[in-house]
Image 1 (cartoon, rainbow, N blue to C red):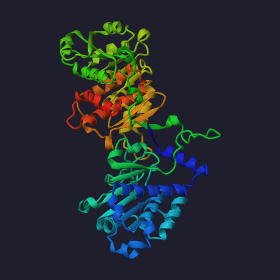
Image 2: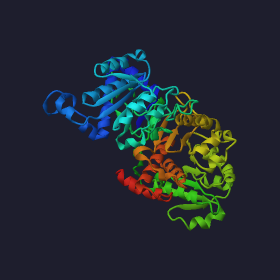
Image 3: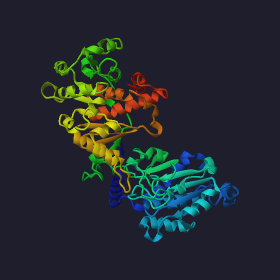
Image 4: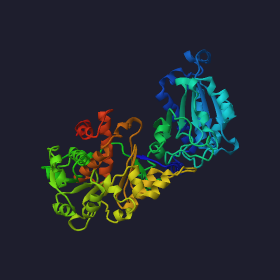
Length: 556
């Protein structure tokens, strides 16, 4: 899995590389600017073909200065901020100018206060063109209005910690500009908190936040959390990562002295970007792949448990049993074949069933009903023979403890997985949810990663906080993000029962021997992959049936 970084982690990595003497800050800035230009041309190849001369062709051959003047020149407006993000912008402006573009550069802030490396690139640009002060009126009346512009937002990058005292709506194109207008953001769209993906606002209704969504965002070295969380994906448009030569500075370095990581590995959040290799099955018989028990609601309320059970079976568990109360047995029996069923009507029956040590994973919640949950959870998490069995708590098993979450937390252990959506998270962790709902006026803003990590530490088990930006955290702080955004967007997962199937996937993987964190990460990845394989029109019943195709595509 790939690391995704906070602003502070990125600064630590750059600082370690610079202090090692292996690279200078000015060189990193040059690489960043070049990475932005290369990303622009890769995204829109026509801009590279029609933008004017390449640097090495500027003075001879068929693309001589006279030939360049005869061509239609491309235009760019580069907005530079008061920090190193602005320095990147000056590099972008220079490189585009060298290719024959018409480039206008605007600076927000005082040139005399630019950081040293940004100041060097500011002065380099002054040898090629002028710099004008950024103000809304100038920008609206004299720049974008000419049409056909590439606008590069290098105003505020990952280091933004306050609301922007600037009406960023000035970056929004007028409708008349049409499809020729392209907005490219350097690192993150200005106004977006790179740690949380949230817009930093202030009290003025027309200031703070960000402008219109970017067409392209270019990050450096790694994506940042804000590219994947909250408003980030919608604000960034498409995000690409430019290599600026910092590989090896994130993880521990290998050398004669052993080296040191620039950032402690345990602090880094990872992006769930593929399935776990443990998905391949090997073994002599079904019991070698686990036996999951999923508890069902009563008559007319067994569908959620059946969805979870089907998901567990399809994900590769050896056996799945549905624990069903007497009044729903006929209903369930008419709907299942490969799934097994036993009668579990009360806590005593559950305790008796769990005496079978081969039942190594349990799912409670989907359609179970609040009263039955309160009766069953203490048994499922109890001491003795049931202690430390893998347990997934979903849906009703989370809502049943609203108002008294500490009663649940006192029973949980490290082999449990909680799978709340936003409403269920609020019921269990009202204070953390309240912090997420606060409008951020400074950064780094409180993020879904922060909230999920705190929730996992408080609960003492793995927490999977659902959403397009699903965050998964273990109690010791390990954390990952599964992002259903950009090319992996799957909005049709917003359908009744899809969360029950996810709970089943995780339960099945736990039964197969996955750790809680592995089961949650892999289950989330498979869940979205199944949705993408099916496509629009998906209903929850379709998700388990897509797993065979997903597994074939993985070469299993």
